[in-house]
Amino acid sequence: MVTRCPPSGDNLLDSPEPLLTTAELATWLQVSERTLRRWRKTGRITAVEIGRTVRFRLSDLVPCETQG
Image 1 (cartoon, rainbow, N blue to C red):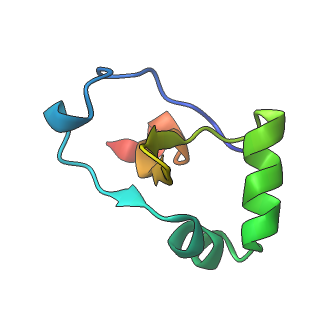
Image 2 (tube, rainbow, N blue to C red):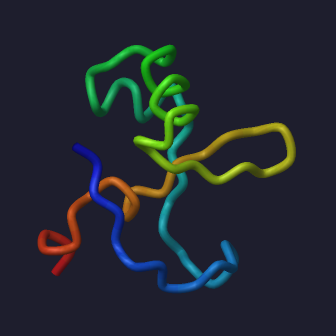
């Protein structure tokens, strides 16, 4: 289950956190890119769209309690 943390701000330039590509996140979660696209479509996971590219914030995926 993917847990969302409260947003710290909507401006991507305010946060130095890295944005993961679909391929990077699929490798990290050990699922297919198709699964990530399906999760995105159903709202199970959130993504950031920059133009025509899709990126994922690590903080949207890691439970708040483990972020320190």
